[in-house]
Image (cartoon, rainbow, N blue to C red; front, side):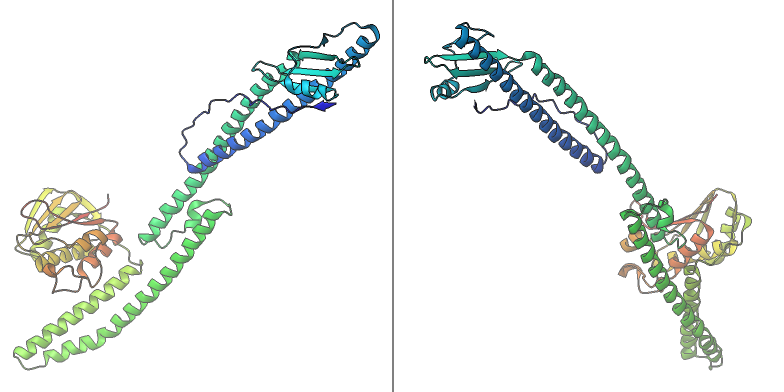
Amino acid sequence: MTRLPYRLPRPRRTSGVRFGLRWRLSVAIAAVSALVALVLSLIIYNATQVSMINSSRDVQDERLQSAQRIYESTERLALGAVLNDPDLPAPLRAAVERGERATYVSHDGGDAPDVWAATPLPDGGVLSLHSRFTDRYSVLAELDQTLILGSLSVVAGGTALGVLIGGRLSRRLRKAATAAARVAEGDADVRVREAIGGRARDETAELARAIDAMADALQARLEAERRVTADIAHELRTPVTGLLAAAELLPEGRPAELVRDRAQLLRTLVEDVLEVARLDGAAERAELQEIALGEFVSRRVRTFAPDAEVRVVNDAVVTTDPRRLERILGNLLANAARHGEPPVVVDVDERLIRVRDHGPGFPAELLAEGPSRFRTGTSDRAGRGHGLGLTIAAGQARVLGARLTFRNANGAAGGAVAALRLPT
C-alpha cells in the first residue's frame, strides 16, 4: 500500500498576552517559559495529528479491502465504495494507474481532513472510498484548548517565579548598595554580608564578600596612614614647643617676631593634624550638656569675630558638647574671615546655625566633594591656611551627630553659607 505525502495544517494561533513586568529577570523567565510551552505544544499537537492521520489511513485501507472482497464476490458496492469516482484526487489516480493500492489525505479547511483510499480492479476499474473521520478529529480541538490553557499556565507560573526570584535578588542588591553607601560614608562597622542576610551562596553573597574585603583593606590602609600622621605630628610637638621657647629668648625686633609667628603657625598646624588624626580614628565621644544655643553662640561670636553680626531668630535649649560646638563655630568664623569678605552674619534658628560671609563663595570642588585636608580651594580663596579648618569642623560635626553643609548664597551679594544642624 502506498501512502501519498500529506502536508500538516498549522494549528490555530492564539493571541499573545502581554504582561507588564518590573524586572528583566521576570521578563526573561516569562519569555523562556512561553518558548518552552510553544515548542512542546507544537510537538504534541503535530505528533497527535500525525498519529490520527496514520490511524485513519489504516482504517480506510482496511475498509477498502473489505469493500473490494465484497465487490469481487458479489459485484455489489458496500461500505460507501464508489466505482470509477470522477472526483478521485490526481495523486491517488496516478498511483492506481501504476497498479498500486494507495491512500491519500487532503484538507479543505474543515474540522477533519478527507481520507481517500483506492485500488485497481482486475477488470480495469477503480474502487475507491472517501470519508471524513469527524468524530476522531474533534479530539484535536479539545487538545488545542488544553495546550492553550497549559501554555498560559506555564507562562503565568514562570512570570510569578520570575517576580519572586527577581524581587528577592533586587532586595538583596538594594541592601548591599545601602550598606556599601554607609561604608563609603565612613561607617567602619557596617558589613555588606551581614546587611543582606540569609545563607544563600550566590553571586550577591560573593559580591558582598568582595566589598567587605575591599572595605577591610581600605580601612586598614587608612588606619595605618592615620597612625603615621598622628605619630609624625606627635613627634613634632616637642621640637616645635622647644622652638617656641627658644624664640621667646630672641632679642626684640622684626626677625624675632617673624620667627615667633612662623613657629606659632607650625604649632597650630601640628595641633590641627593631631586633631584630624583623632577624628579619623572614630574614637572621639561627645560630652553632652544642655545649653541655650542663642546665648552660647552670641558669646562665642563676640570672642572669635567681634565684627560679625549675630541674629537669633528662634532660640532653643539643645543637648550637645559645648567644646566641640565652639570648635566648629570658631573654624567656620575663621574660614569666613580668612577667605570671605565682611559682613559676616551668624543666624541661630532653633537647632540650625548659619554662618555667611559676602566673599566669592566656596569653590566648586568643596561643594561637590566636601572639605578635604590641605585643599584651600581656588585662587580667589587660596593662599592662606592649610585646608584643615573645615575638615576639622566636619569631623567634629560627625562626633556631635550634626549635619554640616556648604553652599553659595544666591543673588548679587553672593557669599559662602555654612549651615550646622544639630540633632534632636
